[in-house]
Image (cartoon, rainbow, N blue to C red; front, side, top):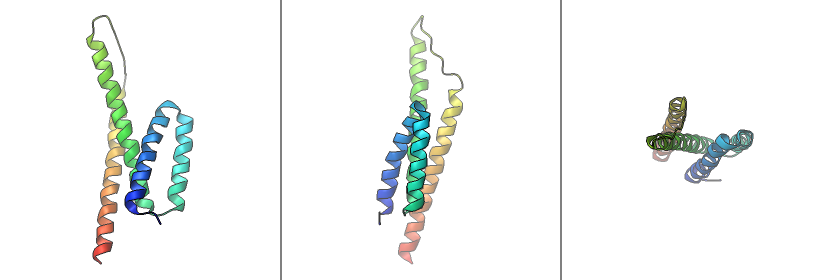
Length: 119
């Protein structure tokens, strides 16, 4: 059986890869997401793996979207050049929401594990 920390880290890394694929090759990203959810369904610790996956996707999504916004603003600062990233603020908020959900689930998993070890 895989430990919760190992499952969290493995699925967080899978979440990073999944976020990149969702942004670059959406069909491949959805396929990887389905495989990851299948892996979570059939192996424990499920909650730790789910928390890692959600945190990885949310963190990467947020970082990439913020990077796009910052790069576009820097590009616009040069005279005679223009860059548009319309509506990207909403996607940043979505990423922050996913990241917050993953972080909250991660905290819940840790608290649950501590409760079991004390009992």
